[in-house]
Image 1 (spheres, rainbow, N blue to C red):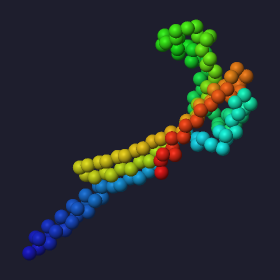
Image 2 (cartoon, rainbow, N blue to C red):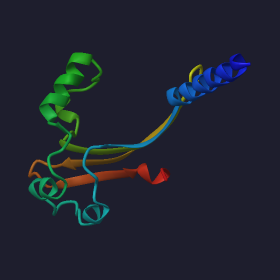
Image 3 (tube, rainbow, N blue to C red):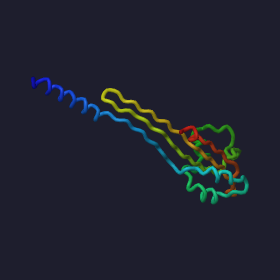
Length: 144
């Protein structure tokens, strides 16, 4: 008679151990500084300087100077005309990434879902280090 009670505890112990091996994970992922939309509205082409941009948004994640970009084009042999005809100015690039992560970890089955979206701000500067034009795309608004 003691044997069925012992088997019951072994089975229940096994079930409890299996539940301890399973888990659920919910998290958020952030990378880079947030891009202030209020400051973007203050950018005025021909007026706003490179120093103001760096003061507002911090150091850019990417900085491309015309000489480096032209060198890349020359090495890739994609230019069809003299490089002096390409109007590449200094480019400042900012990116903020945010993601939602969900995961279920079971003994025989695992499921992970990650949605990562980005905000991009690209600013083109003229020879006087003033904003020539800029572009902003807000992708993180799609995340809840």
